[in-house]
Amino acid sequence: MALIAPRVTAGLPADDARNLARSLADSNDITVFVDGTVHRLPDQARNAVVDLLARLGRGETVTVSSVEEMLTTSQAAELAGISHTYLRNMTDRGEIPVEYRGTHRRIRQAAIMAWLETQKKKQDEETVRDDGNAG
Image 1 (cartoon, rainbow, N blue to C red):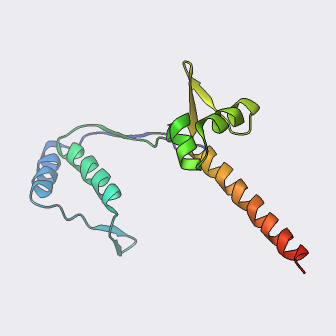
Image 2 (image 1 turned 30 degrees about the horizontal axis):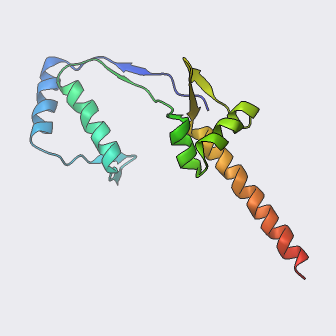
């Protein structure tokens, strides 16, 4: 999955920065309009937008980018519901892609989610096959 390139936005002019900072200081209610439709943001998105606006309100140049979450093998094993050893063995066999940070293995969360989806499909296929043989 390709990540979108970072976008850099210059700080606001002083007057605009002051007006934005004043507005943010007096309110926690941020309303977003997209094509004339009001959207209520979930807390995480709201916090990110408020942080972005606060930085612009201070006249700071802001860079927005995305980060794909990298997991330790312990975190990945817990997410997958399998043992740490079993996960390490799968990375050794190349069944789950792994990246190294020094000697430490890191696994993309997306790779674990894809593996889980594959396991679910296999389980569903086995269930259908077993149900077909039950008659």
